[in-house]
Amino acid sequence: MAAPIIDNAPLPDVVLAPGSFADVEVIAHDPDAASGQGTVIVTDSGGNSTPVQVALRVDDPLTFGDAVLSPELEGRVSVVRIATEANRAVYRFTAS
Amino acid sequence: MVLLPVSDHQGNTTHATVSVTLGEMIPGPVSRPGVDQTAELQAWWNSGSALWFPPGAVYTCEGQLNLIDRHGVWIEGNGAEIHAPSLLGDLDPSGKVRMRRQLYLESSSEIMVRNLAITSVGTGGWDPLYEAEAAVFVKASRNVTFENPRIVGPGGDGFEVSSLMQSGCVGDDCGPTVGLRVLGGSVTNPKRMGFSITGSARDVLVDGTKFWSIGRSCFDLELVNAALNIENVTIQNTTVDRFNLNWFGGGGGGTHDGVNLIGNVTPRFKMKWGSPGAVARRNFLMQDNVATDPRDNAYFSFLRGTGLTFRGNQADASWDGGPSFAECLDILEEANSWPS
Image (tube, chains in turn brown, yellow):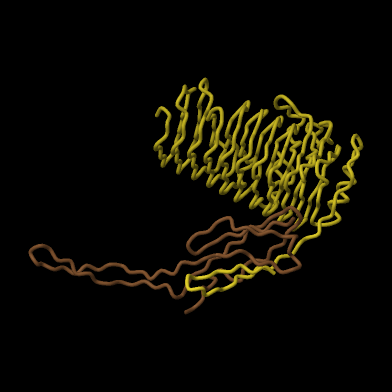
């Protein structure tokens, strides 16, 4: 199975002054997700059948994890996720 | 480097990567109460691009601090204050107007000023002698952000945006100011306008700022000649307690295309957009604003505008003469709580 793909890579570089913050948005999708159409047969009490087309989607929801800082940034930068949607998250980087 | 993991429900993981650089800030000088430190602060500002005020410092500055042809400057105010103890700026050549701006930006870009107070001693109403003495003057600059400013008592405007060689004159146009943002903070007791645009400007946002005791108009978009243009100006989520002329003024010359007033609170909708000398007034949106003073709630006068939308505004008390839409085209009024 394929891993998620970051749609807005490369992400912008972040330059932080002490006390400042910057927000970084990550947009991704999962290539295993798929959608298409199927047909459902609907039959009434008189035995009359009608094919009805319905949309089908194979969902593969994404999970945005906690940031992993390189050692030189630990204790000097904090990162929190301030927004999460189905395929999008926003991380706030703050310099201490 | 920072890794941001993104996983699907089967456990497959990709890492987005972000490069993070920590800037080194240059700390400001020690404040010396009562001593004019204009030159000292200016030298510090000229020394680098990441400037860090000592928290709570108060500097006396009788002169003007300049950011001219500066690019990529971060000023972290930390609540520090630049205070002008008088309105005694230099006179212009006419001898009629004093010209000191406390913070003057010209031909600069990518400027951030955060948490800085700029104060002076102006009180009461408009006085033409001091009307050019804005606390902050932004001319022909790009991507300038003021976050949480605290402006008190300038002789002129809290913020004045221009493209001209000299505010108020019909001088050379230096090009528009583009991408100015004022976020949060407050403007108190300016003797003239709270926020004004007198020269060409585009993509301007005032968001969440409080305006107290405004000597003349709170928001004044008054271009001083026919060749100037205002495009895409949004004033939203502001609160105004008192003004002496207009809540919003859009007289003067030139062209306005795209003025948006959204979600603001004001004592009354006293407004003017258009004038006999204007070239064009297009696309005005007034949405979800609230007028709170039940005694004198609205008067507005629109002249020769096109594309006016008024939606969801509340002014459900008395009216004082308005509205007036002289020679206007394409007006939409819906869901307003005001007499039609």
